[in-house]
Amino acid sequence: MIGRRTWSVLGVSAFLLVDIALATWAMSTTRATTPETPGPIPTFASVPSSRPTPTETSTPIPLTAQAAPRLFAAVSATEAYRATRGTCTGPAAVLEKTTDAGATWVPLPTTRYNLHTLLALSGATDTHLAAVAGLKANCAVGAYASFTGGQFWQGYPANLADASYIDPRSPDTIHTPTGAEQSPCPTALQLARGFSSTAVLCSGTVAVRVDGAAWTITQVPGVLALTASDSGYTLAVAGAGGCPGIAIESLTAGASDSTLIGCLASLPAPAELTIGQSGNTLWVWSGAATMISNDAGKTW
Image (cartoon, rainbow, N blue to C red; front, side):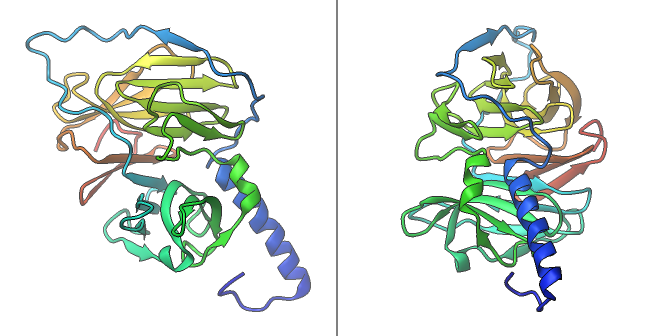
């Protein structure tokens, strides 16, 4: 590995076996997943929303979800990675790391390794980080991993098949461990992987598929972002539950509706909102601000 001292033959062999195993695991998800059986073009089951119909006194929904311009990988209550996606022909992705709960962020090298765009980011530990990235020359998509906290990177072509991501050049297609397939909506905005399920954020809806079954589409007006959690998925929603800012909701895989968890009242609905979760620690990144809840979004 780049930047590491010379080890004994036995030590290097053991280290490489651990690194390769961790890289494969991190590229799939930060939690264990159950392999899904490939199926035909997906069918969709629409689930009516149980949310009340907005009235003239209801809080207006100021924004709808957009293709996530940012990525976030939560590792613990103090450690996380964040990144802008970058573009193929424009500015490159910017990747940063914090070890002090977001008080400071340290930039990490990506352009040195020609990682011009970032499509997915997964932080397994404070030193093990995996990414799906596009190379600058032609934005060819590949799988990469770092075992030095993002300081040095190496390509792992075989891991790309286990990764979940959306290529912004074809937002009607999603990529999961079962292969490339039709998105459950015309434009997939964000994608997250749970234990044995996949969630896709669309405009005003969240589509969830469990164990390769049909997609269940839940109406979530004002949903802006989602991330995988231990119980399913956590959503950031504008104009919901009487919250004047960003409502935090939970969606269990296979459930017909989301459940209100808490309210981040201090944050008005922003255009660029990204969330990440590790256990009960929920991170929100908006603008230059980073906010943390240690009870899964109940209090801030």
